[in-house]
Image (cartoon, rainbow, N blue to C red; front, side):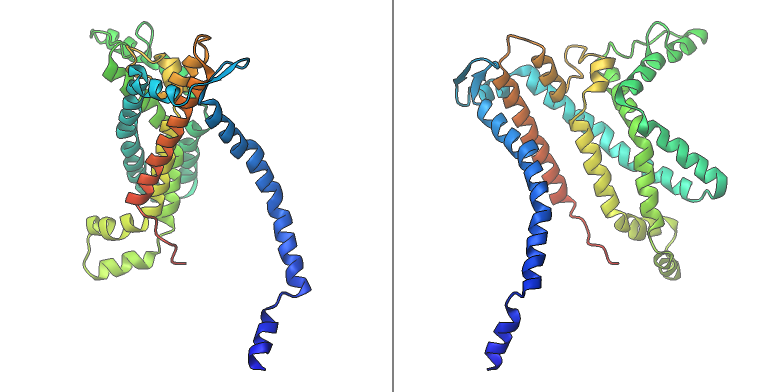
Length: 304
């Protein structure tokens, strides 16, 4: 009898059935939108990438588009460039905001609020406007830096003519645009660390450097991971800055995969299936890169 009574209690009541129906009714619209705008386009892209397709005619070619894309030297150069962008920009975009957030944390009142607002202003400026601003600064003929160098009797520098300087100019422009929100993220993380942790470390005789190593950095692990994922994702999708500042030059030294796909789209001789194959490769590369980051830096569960 005890067993039967426990089974009866586990049976769904009319109220529990209604709860399940309500839950499924609330999920179905999201699943429908996901299917229409994500899953179906992804399925169509994969199937069309296996064809020689130009909106009017379609001929199945198998994996030919993928092999051609993987053997294309310009596509290879685009992936090399994007890895260099990540290598240069992402560590700087995490470390410098972390150090600057320490300085901002000590500011209180009107000055602190003013600096936080000024920090966030570049984040609301689009990449197009950012590129135009830095073109005015770095331009060879009338840029602010070259005018300053000329007034000091020094030789002007053509920042966009050399591969290294052109890439660093784009990296600095992207860093300027993302510095604000990365700093504010890390400032929020610093403010979320309990003061009792630092007090306990001070009682154990830990100095400022040891408190940062053994208290601050471990507690900021999830914030660092967030900044890394945002930085890597934004860099992988970069197109506006190199397109407007260098157009991928000189000699494809600053071209990115997304920019390469964009340029192929404007070429009527290139099959749409080939562009879709390049896009699928880029999607797989981005997903794998993000998974590697999560595997290497496992997020900590909240203790609260």
